[in-house]
Image (cartoon, rainbow, N blue to C red; front, side, top):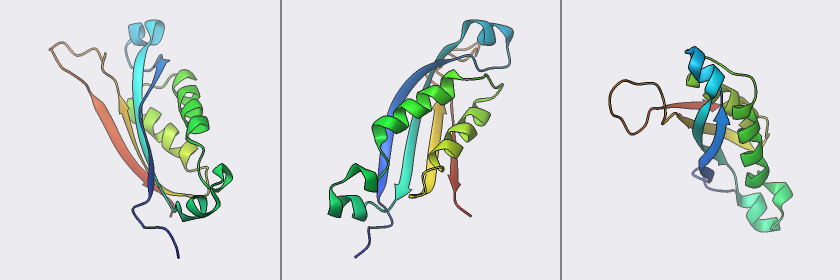
Length: 124
């Protein structure tokens, strides 16, 4: 018996400080970014074994996401989302990942609650 095609691990609201953006002050001062990821994978092996080795360790994944946000700056949050998707897909068990990067302090001159990009990446 294999897992349902809808099996997923979801991490919501992973927060990290980064220096991403096109404006000099964004690069200089930095700001908080919030990341949500949804990993599509077969969770049946982990459910059967009850062993974290048979799944993606979400605590370690959260730390890797924070490190990806904190490292070298990029201009666009699209590029940051792509970086995060690539690190998630390094896990062989993951078939597809949906990454949303929020930039709630973006330099937008009108009142707003959030700005975010969402990408979906999978194996060929």
